[in-house]
Amino acid sequence: MKFATKAVVVGQEPESAHHSAITPIYQTSTFVREEFGTPQSHEYSRVSNPTRSALEKCVASLEEGKYGLSFASGVAAEHAVVSMLRPGEHVIAPEDMYGGTFRLFTQVLEPMGVKFSFIDASNHDELEASITPTTKMIWLETPTNPLLKIFDIKAISKIAKKHNLLLVVDNTFATPYFQKPLLLGADVVVHSTTKYINGHSDVIGGMVIVNDEKLYNFIGMYQKSVGAVAGPFDAWLTLRGVKTLALRMRQHEANAWAIANFLKGHPKVEELFFPGFEDHPNHHIAKEQMTGFGGVVSFKIKGGYAEVKDFFGRLKIFHLADSLGGVESLVNYSTEMTHGSFPIELKKKLGISENLIRISTGIEDAEDLVADLKQALE
Ligand SMILES: *Cc1c(COP(=O)(O)O)cnc(C)c1O
Image 1 (tube, protein in one colour):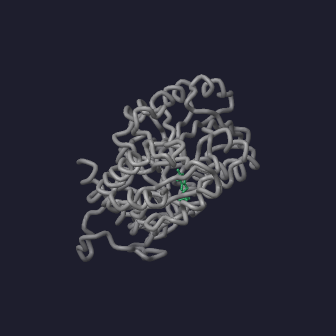
Image 2: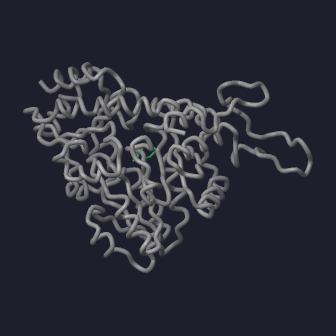
């Protein structure tokens, strides 16, 4: 079965009691036991719920994975994965990553004794050199937020396998429509389903997808023990969103191309970041491991804080907000918003500067979006 079909079909067989075509919202905390002493598929909704199970099956199949686990947020999904680590164990992660993930690692995990090395993951020698006897995991996010660097999943998975490390990939930006990390050698995929997978900016959610049964059992144990699960209504909304993922991603990408082409060479643009361009430093890797370049475009406006403020103030269709991947176009001021928790020195080093603007293209008409940017820049 192909991607767009699976998004509509997998886990979503007509329900048996009343033959409803669409998976119902099983808004219940518990399930009545049919027979004393006989286990049944659903017993208590922290442990499992039919609406959540449908979502888990569907997204797992889109990632070409065996098992999916759905959480109340992207960071809860990430926490489930890093909860496998014990004090003294070590993780290698890129310096370029979502600010909330960085905060989880440095403010929750590090105080509990887990060690992190934040490195330039495009430098494979540096990556391999930072492996120590206690290293257990390599964490990747690609494309990165907000500078859209691309890391080579296949090459890094070879390093991970050689040293017997787990490779985790945050696939939020690409989605399985454009990139399938498990097929490229990753062991674990995590998602903020808040973004493209749900796609309508009305749910916070997260997901973990794995192939290995032992990993699944561990993370499943964590999921029911800690209980940061997606509620039935959130799972239902996300399942409704995922049905149109293929359609939406095509439109997001088409709009990203239109915007990137408009911004390219614009006199008010100092620097442009879009992995689709041949002169993007990692374009060749993106072409190799992705089937599209996604819906995010970042750029540096000529000037500084005042010019950014002026530009945001003039936009009519784009709204200034955190988050991305929804049907509506958003702009984000990364240095203060998504990356507010990053140390200033690291932001400087990476180029998350005070004139950097991230655009999440929605699914509106590209002509309207370009016209809005045009009037706001001029
Ligand atoms: C938003 C985001 C997260 C965190 O997800 P939440 O749903 O906000 O908890 C993690 N990784 C990336 C790349 C994100 O964009």
